[in-house]
Image 1 (cartoon, rainbow, N blue to C red):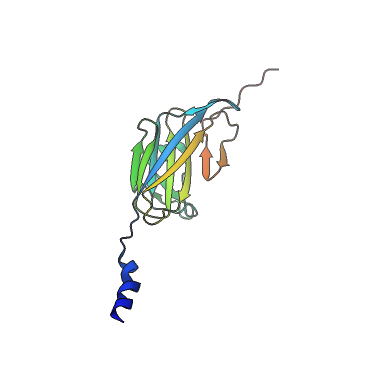
Image 2: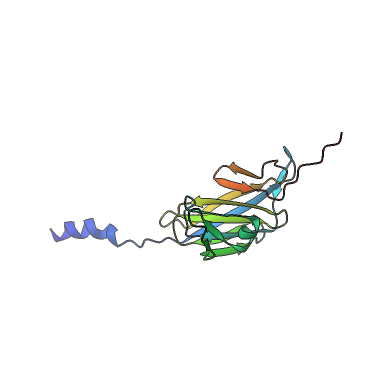
Amino acid sequence: MLAVVAITTTGCFKKVSLDCRYNLRPYFQAESGGETVLGENTIAYAFAADTTQWTVASYDDALNGVLTSKTTGEKRTDAMAYAEQQDQTVVLQLTATPATIVVVDTKNHLYAWRMTEVAENLPDLYVSVTWRPWSTKIQYIEGPWRMNNEAYVAPEQTN
């Protein structure tokens, strides 16, 4: 009887961890249908937050790691992680779930955010985002990303 109890409870003592390296690779596409190349000058923040309750209100907020409550307007700056692009990736250490990831292309004044669930004992997660400054939409959804291009200015029409 003691052996049965020992065997059935062995799995209960496994170490469970929420400590995941979020490996983000930014890409850049200068024109519609153009070549997609590795992006530059990308920074990112990770928050223990749910995007149904929190949002990024502006480029300046994204740049400075600020989330805004959708219901109260409260601002928060308590990111669990911050990282700058090193070589080809931006690596954030996630220690809570859900996590809201805020990514900023500082060269072209673009930003995006998304929510992700962190699975227990997942050491690495590999994700990409593609910056498209040519997009005529100031806000749009691309896959799981909420993309923002507040700096977009429509070309002047000549008559």
